[in-house]
Amino acid sequence: MAPRKPGEPEPELEPPAEDAPKPAANACMDYYPPYIESYNLRPKLTTVYNTVEELMAPKPKRPPPPSPSPTAAIARRWGGISRDGLGAYLQHPETFPSTRVIYYTDDFVAVHDLYPKASVHTLLLPRKATFSDQHPFDAFLDPAFLAAVKVEAAKLKRFVAKELQRRFGAESAAEARRQAVLDGEVELEGDDEELPPGRDWEAEVKVGIHAHPSMNHLHVHVLSRDMFSPCLKHRRHYNSFNTPFFVELADFPLADDDPRLHPGREQYLRRDMVCWRCGRNFKNHFKSLREHLETEFEEWKRE
Image (cartoon, rainbow, N blue to C red; front, side, top):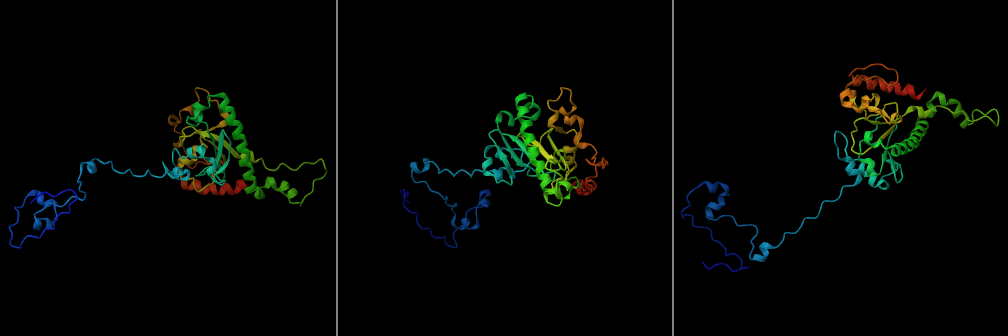
């Protein structure tokens, strides 16, 4: 049979006669479908290169995958949360709704925690990579940076306090007289009398960092002390905010011999769980603690 020219279609093949001898069986035959045995042919290649140019031509490149959105970056999880998820807030805070980003400046971003561990839980994030990529113990060695963080954290603390007052002020006994004046039910005795201060909501706000942060980017927690949230699910969640594992921002700079510099050695997260409000020890019984925290939350709101 003459060789086929490039581009010429393959000739039609007639099946062999029924009495045609079959090829001897061998191990390779097991790799092909039964009909191959009848034709005594190997299967055709799906692609036939007729010229050297076709063979050497570069294959078309696949389009690159779409870049993940900021929210998709946060959705990637590590132990329940993405370790790099906070980076999306630093790069493009303007792309997030006000329900997520509270405010931002050239140096800081304030956000609501995606998995809050209290009724109001926010985070303060420095935006400059010089500090945002550092552990807070190292970053806070810079006096100027530490001072700037304290000023900005105080601003966010006032925001959290006002949010607590907005949510729970009507239920608080300490707010009763102030609220009565605002509602017009009680009048001030004279022009010199000031509006009653009401409850000190800033005293109900905690500000600090974790001795061993779960996120790669530096962040300061600014949250209410009530520890009432459906996202509070484990002993380590609770103890991370209610043992020395949570280092108050006001305590910085730390002394070189401060035991909080070695959280693993101190085993803070493995300690018994103690109610932040009444001091009752629940040991390692988280379910009992959580039920108790709900009762404490209702009483705390009414103070």
